Image (cartoon, rainbow, N blue to C red; front, top):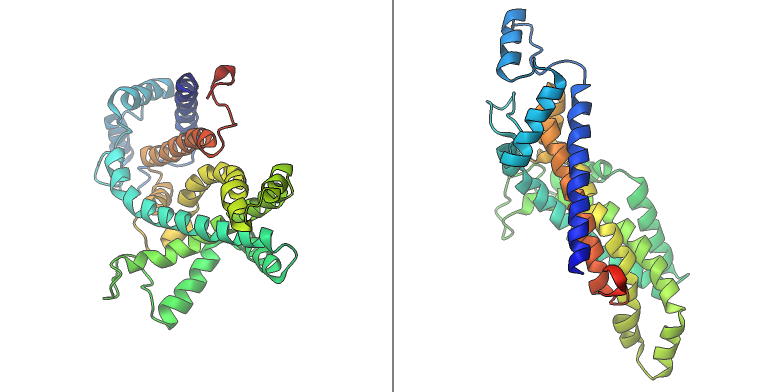
Length: 316
């Protein structure tokens, strides 16, 4: 197990190095310059480019950029944010995105797993059809559509929740402004988890060991909790890793709708102003989070089902 984790960490580092390299060169292919301003003379633009090292050959820029990341954890400075370090800006913004991402993940997983279990146990019933409709809607309708509907109906018309970030209602729940964006993001998670849980649970319930467990006199609840659900969780765990990152990247529009000061809002502003180091920094952060989530998912396989052997030689 330990050797497996070390090998996976090594793969992670190599993959992250490739991501940093590809991101650096792709960002340099974007049209325009971060200093495209009619008020600046060509001499002033040349002076600013020299100050930030943007007039050096691209390989030299890349070597310096990579060295700063590897040895100093420095992703450069933000041109449009008063020359603040990119890492500091990301740290200041990650809290808002992480809050709505975590809330939507927990809500989506719980509701989706519950719908999937009910749908599998009540196969071909009205509950199964209802869960199917919810799953199709969650996948088909973009999250920003749900966001607009929730914002208008529950926020503007009903007045139950704030329509923008950071505006408390004066009720007992302190962070009430986080609910609507979290719910809007959770629909895709609900539909994804529901579909995977239902498909796997239907297959598991028809397995021989489930029939054997029932023949031993175990109640329906015992069979489902101790045997069926545990095995049905494996594909759910598989999709949760990518879902973590998709919730962050999928919140780009959600953050604009609810005026959330998160990473999505930061990335949109950086793209509009051609802030090269901010774009690269956010892309690298998303990639590192995705790579790390894949490692966590692989390790969780062994926790959920001990029969899955992760280490070499078939020993967990």
